[in-house]
Length: 430
Image 1 (tube, rainbow, N blue to C red):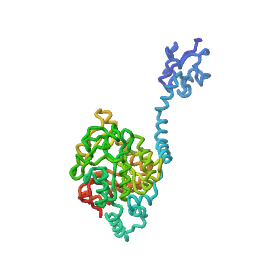
Image 2 (image 1 turned 90 degrees about the horizontal axis):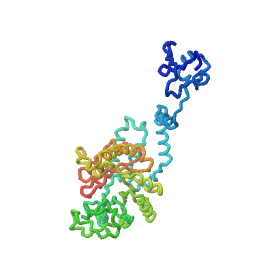
Image 3 (image 1 turned 60 degrees about the horizontal axis):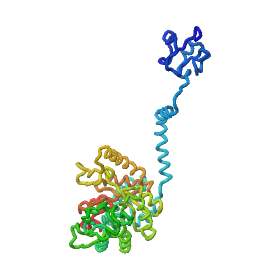
């Protein structure tokens, strides 16, 4: 190094207040590749290298930034974790999400078709009234009109037979559908699943033990293996209904249509083949577009079904802790939410987090994305506040499963909502 010139290392001092505070090493700093003496004795890469050495030290660090030899990977990671990048995520993330939802959203079916299936809902007209129309002079008449529409004599309130009134006859059976017609019931809910050979059947559980007493899984059995099983052996009225078989889904739908019933098709299957099965059924029975509604816990399957046929009316089914618990008992929800799906703690924790995330997605994204017209809520979560919140989104609330007569009167006469029940006994509908 030429005499009279030194390599100044001021790494720890952004500004040098006095020349005596500067560290002036007489030898180059070992291992420092960013500050190294050049052939001219100046700092390599220094933008102010033409200034005297003391003036260089007095410059801010960003004026004399050295050339860094850093890998590209480190540079990218540094950018990803900077506050500016996170700010872009926070600001642009909701905008991008909103744009995607708007782009892929499916339109709702025609309102007249919805009214034909679910009944006319006068509350929509009341909700759309302007606030200035409700004055102190007519508030009493407006409240009286509102109460009249909550009356169960309105076609809005319906009693829907859960699994075709599964307590009055073997559930999801042809005899159960006929029993509904004899008792004057016009709305039923039936389940659809696929066998191992992808034959759509009217069945609820994944296994056969509860209904038939056979410890087999439905997904592992072909149609020929289960078509002769008796589904009345464990029913309380097994002496009255004997030798009932699992029906094909097409046969159950055909019978219900011939009896002029409204059908709630509950999709229990998660395989993508169920989408084609439902679409083929609607193509074979076009009247289903005005006589049925597709519902289920999986909004993705409902979305895929309506993606192929937007004229199909659909609803979303919800219960708490669907991903973390395989069952749910509302009477013991304070102490237990049902059997856990996962025994591993971390998997169960992830499922619980998924439940809370799904609750947000269900309320903010699913109704618009799927084009749903109704929400089927677990009965103990139905309240005037919930009904109002969902009605603001254009969705009607249907409670399930309501079996006690006093509960039926509460949901029909007080809350004014339709309900799904296992028995026709104690129904509050006219």
